[in-house]
Length: 168
Image (cartoon, rainbow, N blue to C red):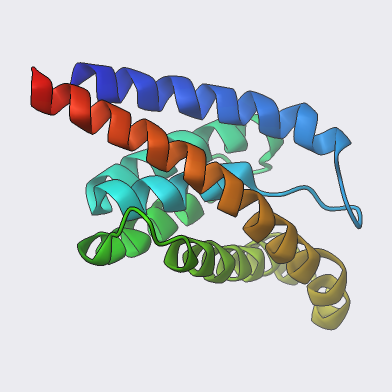
């Protein structure tokens, strides 16, 4: 149990470092994949609602400290997504990569709309069509592609940690 928590914290820190450094330089169509959202959705799907909620909080607070204009905005969004995606843990299959990718796509789309409403719409910027076509949809596509690879890695790690825990 302790190894699982420590590995989760290490994965969150590594993902945050990759998101803020490497993936910012690998932008396609001027958007970077939201690795923190992928991490939250994957942990919620594999481990359940509470793990998704806590992972969403940690990822959100790190994102708030780095990029946020208001502390707690990213945390609230990622916590909500983690909690809601945690309901799908009941249908968790280790070999199925379709449902996590669909969850990441839906979550990233909802997160993009949430971000538009809280950051742009409140300030009177009403061009939603432009934001949708230039930011939200390219980011959703790019994030889904990265999520397929990242989920495979996280799933392998989860299997390894689960097997080690059963042996002990």
